Image 1 (cartoon, rainbow, N blue to C red):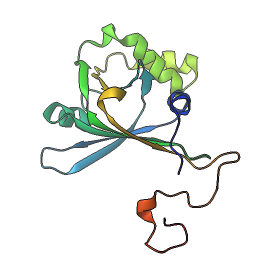
Image 2: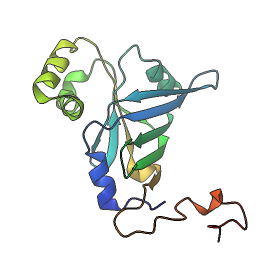
Image 3: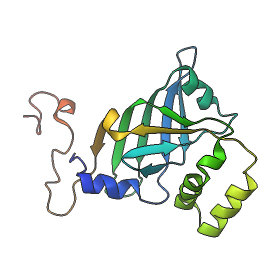
Length: 167
């Protein structure tokens, strides 16, 4: 499958309503995956757990994270990021980044509803994490578009030797 160009990646990251899944490691070594809201800003992905989120405790213990951002409609853009989440603001520091949280909410719900959501949950402390794109392993792909070849679109490692699209 074709990789996303830099401009395609930037465009995808600002597409409203696209959910991200954050994967982290529990203390017993088992994986935890949680669908969440996010925002892309200054070449980084920002995300926020509430105080009682299981994955907040996991990231405090082990900052290794994998983020999956994808869409269900064509061209099925997909991004996987792997790295170490950086805690920018701990619980109780919400006022320092409230405008960013408003911006996150506005990506997912209408502006007036986002304001109400922030107002109605302002007493629920959150932390703010980020993963810088420059510090992450980033993999992207999408289905072919326009005049791009429509056959043999998987990565070569998926084709059995000697099969139709193997090289």
